Length: 140
Image (cartoon, rainbow, N blue to C red; front, side):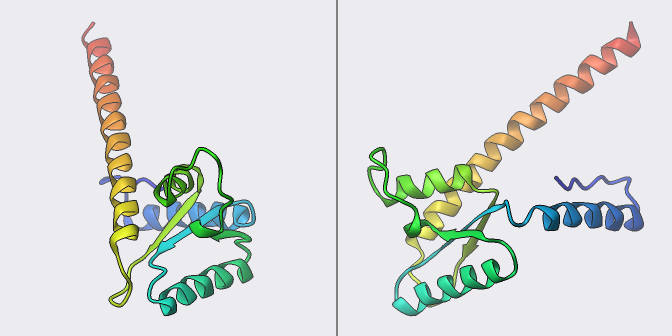
């Protein structure tokens, strides 16, 4: 994962970004890429399908729309299928356009954002605890 540190110079940051991108490109065939967006009007669905096809042609062969996932008995509705996809994909692309109906994609993005915020809070509190322990070790 790419982390930005205030102390990094521009050159260090570019070098780290290059390594990060290189790792992604090496793994692109194994990455699960989910594409979210509006299926209505139908032109919007066709746009999402073209994006998937383009990514597949670039080597991201495990690219899919949520609607293409198999229905499992545990899915109560399409939103359950979206949550399943959000939790299991390596890359989640949210495509919002002016013409498309946004309710579903915005709900998915909000859920994803809330999950990231929870993870960020856990990481932040863990980092604070670690810094406190290190500080106490230095003082002891």
